[in-house]
Image (cartoon, rainbow over all chains, first blue to last red; front, side, top):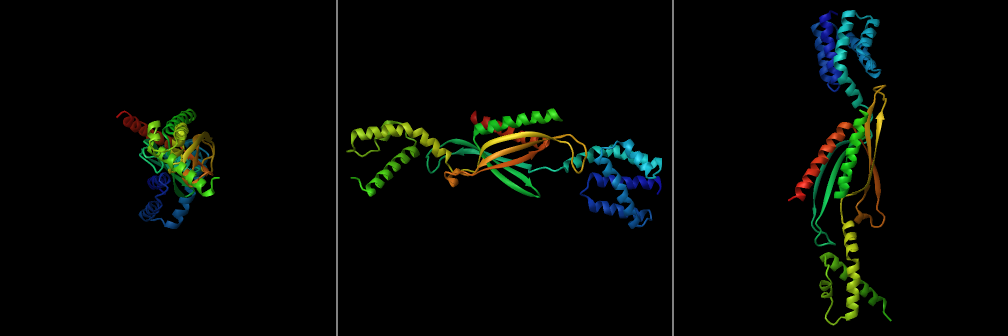
Length: 176
Length: 148
């Protein structure tokens, strides 16, 4: 495989790694590459599978681009090609790291929050009420399903909730 | 001696009277006194009015607390954890927030045994920032309404 072909292939690989949902696009680009360079798709897919193991392992162990380059050279790749790959790794690793962290297990993740507030005008017990209520709708991801939770808060509860959330923010920021 | 029927009628009548006073939000003795029929026993009328006035705000608060509503927030706790490792990354230091909301089902539905459930939600820093933005907007809208 020439260096030009290798760079093109590396590009395709990294585009897939940074957008792992684009599986179809990746496969199409791979078969285009195979036809353009007169390589058969089967062996190409096997090679790509082994190449993909390197960035995944590197990501898990937080390897630097130097270490990635060394790994590839140990695997028998030329210095030039290993260097090129390591460069691409350096450029893409923040995105890849962010993706991996994003995949980390989250319990009952809060996806969305909607609210409305209004005034209770009257009820069956009280002709005139005039109290303010705040209603929150929290969209929560439980496993693979979304669940809506509805909660009503009084004004004092709302201010206290806001205050607590600001304390959480300060706490999270001190740990970042 | 009073019969069971007349006792029941008495309780029922008293109940109707107090409910009416609470519903209309009557707060003055004169308003309550004029609810009684003309030839009603004077001292009894005054005593009943006095007792009703003493209890009115407690009854009103109770009625408001037992209103139908969406589930209500009764308590809230939080903690901040640092995620250090996972199956996709061996080493990291990502702070995350766990928020526990204690929610009570509609009091009107549960009567004397309200069901309280605890919901634990995880928030990333980004989610928290977005949430705070939303809460800030609520606060601004509330002040705008209060200042009108």
